[in-house]
Length: 225
Image 1 (cartoon, rainbow, N blue to C red):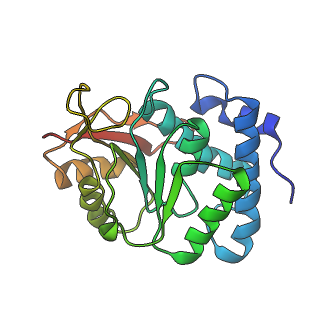
Image 2 (cartoon, rainbow, N blue to C red):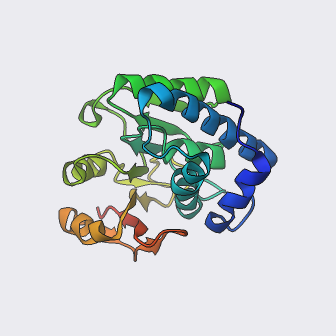
């Protein structure tokens, strides 16, 4: 199976991004999709089988979140908790190549797939942690979640992975105008109140509706102290 046509990719992603991606980014997304489709025949990485639906439902949603969560002039290290097939973390990395990213995935076969995408796309500053998030010793200024199992259990784990405060460049230097660590949740609208009740000590922004969906939102929460 050949890589997905970059021009068609650009058309499908238009509703999700205010600015068009560079040709190299579209090519990387196409190569990623090609790998996903090939591995999906034996590994069941996603129940969505049609390439265009994967672009709009998975890649587009991930890029929409990246555009809201990542500043181009500096960004904190990021953890994708329960990365699975790499959403939203790998599109985050393609959107912002300078991002320092950790993909946490406990299922070994999926972790192998993630490492293969990183190798094939020659991505740098990306780590795959093949284990449970509770065993991961690192911290990050941004933790993202999408379609994780046992959401009510995963959310406190995600919060525990946050740095309490980071600066705009992603370090924890006290003199660098600290910013609170943030959670970025790609969830169903019905889960918004649940998230806020699980982490009532977080400051939650208004949910942001995801394009091309009637029920999906991006919910952003900031740690308080």
